[in-house]
Length: 366
Image (cartoon, rainbow, N blue to C red; front, side, top):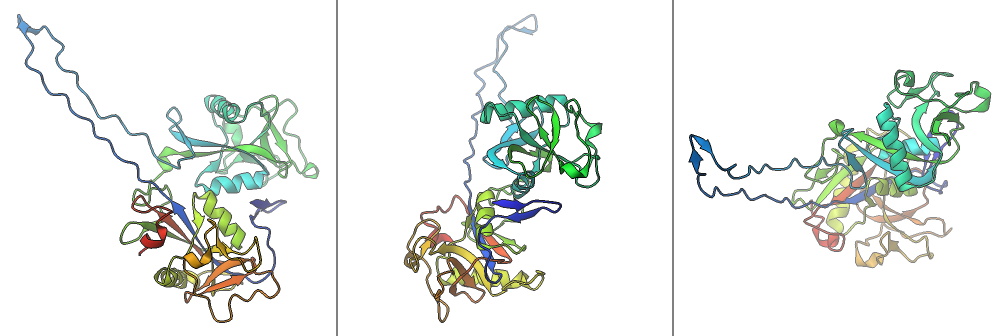
């Protein structure tokens, strides 16, 4: 996934640039963790007393330990900060780093205290030893030399250890974004440079969606509880939809039968009129393709398309130019193939503990 650079950030996850816009659909796996109860200690008898005082401390009082707060499984909870953190080792430009954190429901970290700076550096070195350059969530993109964090607040009010001579000033150097530098202090740099980064989410801002086992409140459970659905309303390409699904711990949805195809189509129909933009409002991206071999259709998990839903629209598949490699679904519930420019809305579908990826063909029911 890449994000556009320059004065205006732009998400560019996919490589395809041709064709008309489509709609898309995706899914995420969730796991419901078992709850463990603690047995209470039975009172073994009254302790002997002497002169009104107990000669025994009596049975120990056992309390239920406070459960650790929940967020994404790939984040670490740090009690001292009451927050969740994730170090991204992959190298991204500042705009990409910002978008990855946003898609995960968090923010690009700017440590606000000396204690959090120490934590930040320790987390990075633990995950990616000998790393000396890391993006932080601060910039002067709004106004020259006025550096703010991701909440738009002046970082001068926080702990802000700039390196000597930094930040360098002037729009000609294009150094609008802030990094942790080799000397352990701050430096402004070109936003197109690529470094690791850290995402953060405060525990107080998390509302865990227990029904779908995700911190994303937009997932809504199906009637039988085996799946959860989320409608996305921003136009994306097939590859962007695939990438977003994975960042959200999701997968681009694989349609299993006619009933699910019609259900998905109706979900998109219910929101499509309110989505602005020029894109094909009749198509929804779904999880199959023939990118490996022309006309050899597979799901994104390697299944033969004939093993799942495969009712084609009239005249489909019709990839005469051999450029329609991406699987789509019409809002009326029939399969088509498409190039991969803008798709539009797409649905996320999560599988709960009552189902698994292996038996998702039988348990999607709404």
